[in-house]
Image (cartoon, rainbow, N blue to C red; front, side, top):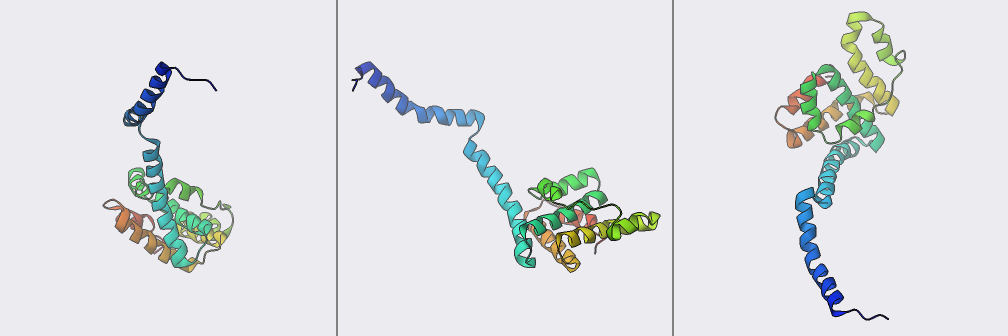
Amino acid sequence: MMKLSPAVSLLIAMFAVTSPAQASWLDSVFGSDEKKVEQVDTAATQSTDLVGNVMSQLGLSQEQAEGGLGTLLSLAQSNLGGSDFSQLSNSIPGADALLAAVPELSSDSGMSGLLSQAGDLGQSFEGAAMVYDAFEQLGIKKEYVAPMVDIAKSYLETNGSEGTVDLLMKGVNSLL
């Protein structure tokens, strides 16, 4: 085994002592990965809280809860202006993932397909029909629409920014 010279030993000891200080300095400049992970975990936990509430209160699978919530958000998106929907979606962590979980519906099937062919009168009911068709495709009873809206409303009352409950209700008013 090779013996280390006193100078090399001193360099190794100095490096070991100063490394934590240098690492914390780098964290302050670039941001700690732990803090970034913690922020992502917090957002995921909050989104999971909403999805988890829907799952536990309505007895749905994660896929059903995410798809159902995404469907409600999709309806709100089509009924609200861009800035109003942005305010609403910013209060729901993982809103983009929920919107991505909405099942794809055929434009000529289900009640929404019939209403799309009925002109202006049909358009006013088409959003609600789209929600019912999506719920049916997800295997969710249409009677769960109002309770799911209530769970989302309760979530926003606790975690949302001011006015988001009103935006949600305005966005899904064709259902209620």
